[in-house]
Amino acid sequence: MSYEVPDQSGKLAIVTGANSGTGKEAARKLAGAGATVILAVRTVAKGEKAKRDILAQHPEADVQVRRIDLADLASVREFADSVIADGRAVDVLLNNAGVMFPPVRHETVDGFELQMGSNFFGPFALTVRLLPMLLKAKAPRVVTMSSGMAARGKIDFEDLNWTRSYDPTGAYGRSKLADLLLSQQLARLATKNGWNLLSLGAHPGNSATGIADAGPRMGGKPSLLFRVAWKLTPQHSAEAGADPMLYAATAADVKQGGYYGPRWNLVGKPVPAKFTPKGQDEKVAERLWNESEHLTGVTAV
Image 1 (tube, rainbow, N blue to C red):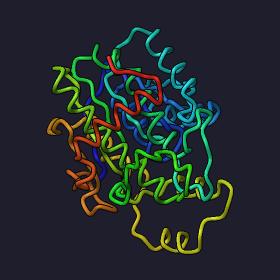
Image 2: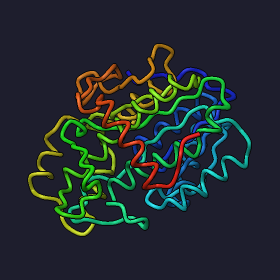
Image 3: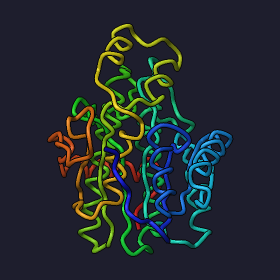
Image 4: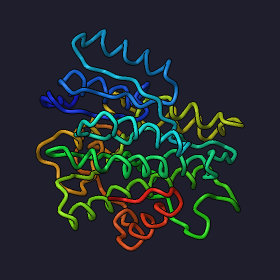
């Protein structure tokens, strides 16, 4: 049974990658529960279509579409500035958008490897820029989407952006491990600084979304092994894949620094997920945060 989001009336939620997949499903459920939802999307036309789909189900919902390209730090700054200019506290930030397994190395406009840039550095910069608006809320939450692939990731501070020997699977795993470390380090900073903010991680399991179609076709063709494995591995819907993120964002019994995923790892209802030990390495998390501030030029309040 799908997770039922509790009443979110009066709250403002921002969902990145909300035009499709888990992001769209999360936005739909939050809007249906009464939240004002900003669909943070790279392609506005796709965001507008998602908005129409949501309003068709929830005609009274308050849904906005704003452009953000997480692979472009200038776009991240423009988006954050627009939210700050509104002056309204942000109750929920869902760092959901991402790209997976481009077979050849791509760079963002800022010179980051595409998966690290889109999946981690962009969300890091967005989160830090929005901290003042999050801290204005009564009980803000930041949920950052990781992946089971985080267990296969490794943070190499000598070559964070894969300039030497690019591996699409390794790069994705690194970006998702970085996301998990981000959720943990933000939780520690919140505790240390006395912020009334919960920072949590989530993963969707094996969710039937377009992420496995788009990335592997960027400059090449996905391997036969990947195509066969994707078809044979147990999957659940995009709605089910969004549930762990929504649980982290809205459930009453979550804990600071918690990590949530499907019950059976790949599929199932949302429950506390098992951490890879690398995702709880405090020294690596702190160093990665500091390095990210340096590389993005964005510093926490």
